[in-house]
Amino acid sequence: MKIKIYKIVSIVAVIVFLLYWSLSILWPMPGFKYRNSIQKKIYFPRVLFVSSWKLFTPPYQHDQRLYYIVRNVKKSFIADTIEILGNISKQKQLKAPFNQKELIVDYLVNKNVVHLPRNRWGDNKKTGKDSSAILASAKMAQAKEMMENNGSYQMHLSSLINFGLVILKEKKINSDGKEMKIVIKQKIMRPFKEMNNTNFIRTETTIFESTYMPLK
Amino acid sequence: MMMRFQIKRNLNWLKKENYKPFYLAFLRVSISLWFLKELCINWSGMDLLYGQSIFIESEKRIINLLSLGNSFNFRAHYRWLIFPYLGVIVLNMLGVGRRFMAVLLFLMVYVLHTLNTTIINGGDVLARLILFYLIFADSYRYFTIFKQGVLSEENKKLLNLISNLAAFSIMLQLCVGYFALGLNKLIDPLWRSGEATYYALMNERYMGTAYNQWIVQHKWIDYCTNYGVIAFEILFPLFVWFKKTRKPFLFAGILFHLSIYIFMMIYGFQIVFILIYGLFLPNDQLIKFAHKIINFFGGKRGAISRYVGLADNPITVPV
Image 1 (cartoon, rainbow over the protein chains, first blue to last red):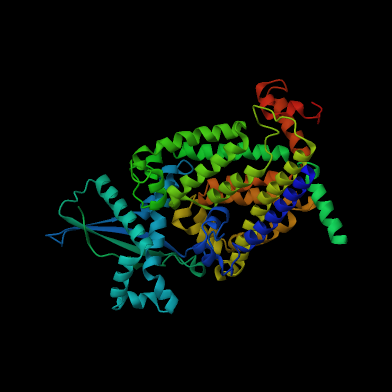
Image 2 (cartoon, rainbow over the protein chains, first blue to last red; image 1 turned 135 degrees about the vertical axis):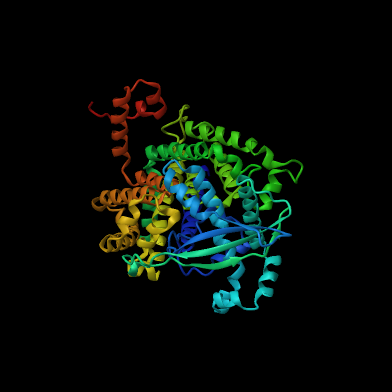
């Protein structure tokens, strides 16, 4: 009887192993279309499976820039502009490999910087429209609606606002009677085909711009 | 009939012995050390990651759970989780509490990862998965302060089977990771054109050295590294299983991860990947190597040797 139980447990272990690995192999593969729908219904795949292995696929062809523009509510022509990401990258490189603090800040800020524009303009990709045209168009109402309803968007925006407040404190900028705006830009890298062109100008394109938000 | 015989033979082979006892134990210790290292180097920034200085918004569910439904401010007392976590890491390293401690550590790591998802990368996820597989593995024959009791023959067979499946899972995880990475690169136009490593090394966020700019100016280096990475990631899962090609691929892997470590400043990730490599090597070879190290550092009678558990091992190595 005891031996029979051991036999059954052994077979169950092998079956569980085979089922787990059948799904595990399929899970990160490009083109596995059921991943998102399963993840929405069941929670455990997030714990046990790696959803994607996409490190540098594709690599970015631009560097990110995060600007905080702070202005006086009454004298709106007086504004301070602070850029964050360029400096973090420089500090990270200078202190490598003992740059853990810079690495933490880099991860914390960049994740929000990358995801915020994606959330805002995500729907436009689905309709196949050019995002730059939409940026200039009257689609602001749609964006505003998304802003109010999208939890993920709100989470990333709040995180960047909180970080902005930390920066203002660090820079000893008084926030009384002021309002702040967040601008995210992409600074294009020198293209591969022009790697030796020293005259290449790295232009910046705005991909996200918030409205002015009052600072408490 | 033939298939049934084949399945039975494979099952018996898996039950016969634990084929990776030494490295599974070493992996338990080293992955615990890795988590300890991550904790130590993040210590000064801990408040920024989990405490009240945090500026990122995180998932409310886990915070509510840890605050016992808002009955206290978890962020102000996050160290109540960190100190036990530290204790569990050390106990797991010493093999105290065995599987109970392994489950506890896995759960604690999962909670910490959920508390701040922004800093989680592929290395963290892979390390967490290793902890999950180690729950099932018999990693307590070496590197424990209390030795294992005698088991019945049937118990031993079952334990061997589950342990071998767990070890195989860790190896498969690495192979699936590489293969998926390679496949994703293969369908990406930038990687196919040979320009991807140029952009990856030129990215300000990952520019680990001032030499990056100089390196990418050489097109032949860009093409070689670009297609080399794809070839390595696609071929590793196939060739690492064969004795003749195993060592060159493991060596190439170490070189590949070291380069990412130095030139791209992605640190923890690389160590976790390399740590798995040892599972592909035969147990006897690893034990012989460990004997040499133990002999070099103080002989077989020392406390370290007793902890490692090599004194009980029948394999003898001429000094």
